[in-house]
Length: 324
Ligand code: ACO
Image 1 (cartoon, rainbow, N blue to C red):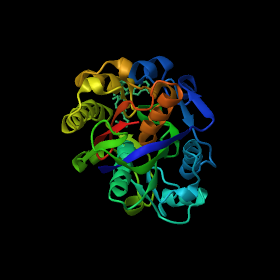
Image 2: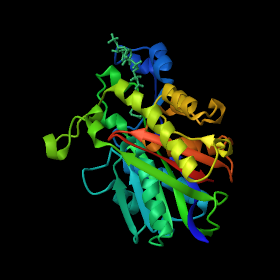
Image 3: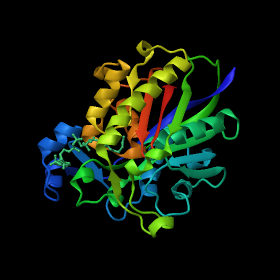
């Protein structure tokens, strides 16, 4: 017997304001045709001035707690992935903890950009399997619109805001790939690529929050390779064949990255959950948002095997293998 972290609740939140590609074409020199052809993005959600990352995370968490039949008081761990915290400190997870009325356990953030949810998931899963917590909230949330340069057409059309989360509960299981729960998560980073995708600011460099800046081609080149390689590695490590995977739920950066990853891995696009057209790139929120959407629209079902690869600034990348 072994301890597994089973997903007992899923939640998501998207701010009400939707910006279309035509709306973006009113502020920068771009077009619906260019954005759809190069990225697959059609719309994105933007948080308004008063909506912080923690506000969105609390809304997603309330939905997940509700679906699990729990309250905030039942949680003893919150791990939250974001690069758009409410404040430089304390952790955005602390505001979420307060917002959920949870007064015990611990709550903290991880910073791994678009891999943030996978890093948070691995951290929480490890703590649950070591018996250091029993019920965890794992959140990916971003208000990227607040660090987007809306004068830069190279970046501003790519990103959106949102929050997604899961509730994990430690349960005894057989220790095989037939178990329900997080079967494994691999995470990697290579900091030598930090300049390729980063914020132009930070408290200890220039006292500024900064804007997103990136070398799009370099990111593109690495994204599909890294996501496909780490996906193949996690399958092999766990003795699972690609045919056994019901759904690929990848980080949603760009439809061409999704297609290239699927092709390299050898999985048909019919088995790929894609929400990039509706959400754009929501960084740490994108994987849990795609998972929530897949479950909501009835594609992803209980007991199915899911493969979740991601890649982001750092560079960071990783994959999680989960039986729902
Ligand atoms: N509208 C119109 N034209 C544009 C726009 C725009 N929004 N943005 C760039 N262009 C122009 C460029 O200026 C360039 O013009 P030029 O040839 O006159 O210089 C032309 O389009 C081609 O630019 P490229 O950068 O070569 O276009 P490319 O086909 O590489 O697509 C893109 C750019 C979509 C950014 C692509 O490189 C990409 O998807 N990269 C991955 C980046 C990404 O998803 N980052 C997210 C964070 S990381 C992650 O999530 C994995």
